[in-house]
Image 1 (tube, rainbow, N blue to C red):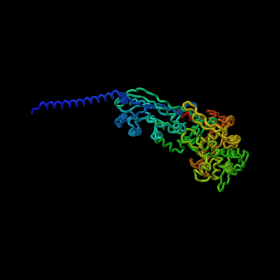
Image 2: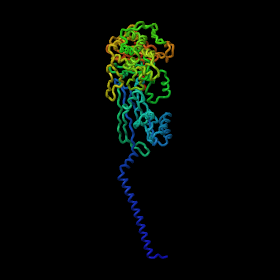
Image 3: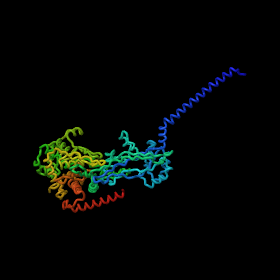
Image 4: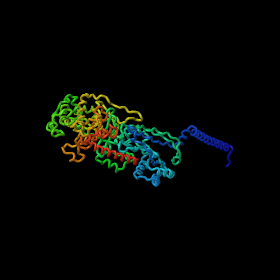
Length: 639
């Protein structure tokens, strides 16, 4: 059927309108597309350029060099050494099992380390590097580097690790470092990124832990270019971190090492202080352990041997343990009595070997008694009955106040782990902690450093320094941080009558130098080095049995405190030998030897010892010198 001219014209108009609509739509779409392309290519050019750069450039943290630790003479106690390790990144490694299998063909891998690394990678962000092998050899690192194209995600690295060149000598003071654990991270509200670096080491105990932030430093960073599979192609730039601050301690390596040798296998401790400054010259616990084993990952067998040893080598006995001070506490009771005005230096008490308090009998160590004794003789002979009677007159409150004035019952401010305050009990303490009233018998026991009284070896050294000077001597263990000297604290007057101190010191002088003194055999013969001291024996059990008749763990502790020289005191020493027996027989000889070593700053002349003892001392000095030389040689080989 033929279309009319009118129909043909109408059809042409419809086609023209549709063409215009379609063309307009296409033009509009092209315009929007052009605008979007301009926005992306011009307005957002910098943003997309940055995203592209991030796809080929990675930023790696550079761990800082940990601050070193030195002794007072500048000898290294804690240092850093280069170590080689192998790390993996999960997002680049692909099949973890396959990659580790290839790696195992090149280096020796510990199954425990591999298991730990796999577990860590599965529970960590995919971009985090995890150490698979630590302390590998240079040959192994070289093999991994050569085969790098076949080991996606595997990176050989050079790092720093802590090393303690003097091994056991400073373990209880300096402590050790170890890899950051989840428990460590939980202590921080917002952990620093550097703590996420694989096997990054932080202080765990001791000075390493107490000065962690100062020693740690701050991390650096490096930008590296990577290819499509994450392989590092080149390093673009590097910003080194800031090394941690170096610490210098007040300790003397030679003296600390000598004490370790002198204590030998005993479960014991010794503290040496300068009485004027409070500087701790030595603070040693025996036996000790090698902190390097903890840095490198101590084996289960080695740790069990330390943990199960009844001499407790892991314990820092000088500050962590508190012992009944025994008769070394008698100076506190004497000063309390003098201050209260209940005794004078010439007042006497009669010792018949015991006293009766209620229905209980309290014995003196000398069963036959000492007869009439005054203050000086009570210290010289260590008469217990004199102090029993004095305690009942003066009361526990006065005794406790004097004890605190001399530094007892207060935790010393030193940067070591688990520092105990000891215990200086009084009536409120017993009522609060034991729910009972204080008894007269409690005061009698406390008067001779038994019962509830507990002190640490460091507290006893502080007490002795204060007795020697009459000033509030405070211990100082860190001499400088980052080259800046730490201040000497305290030093003010104790507020104790100088006459009272003079009378008590006279008794301490007699303990060592009088023919009847309990420590006469441990005296110093050199006139300008003579010392004053006090023996102590603290009971571990209540029953009266000879030490040699009971197991080692039930024997009495042996204690001795001393200062020297008499006219111008410079050094204070405290020694505790666990379950050693009598203080005069066991602790006093050790303290005398340590004192001489500190005064002479090296091996003292034989003339400083009693003539009857010089043959034994010569043999002892030769033995100790030989043992120290052998140990240093062994340490050199281990290093």
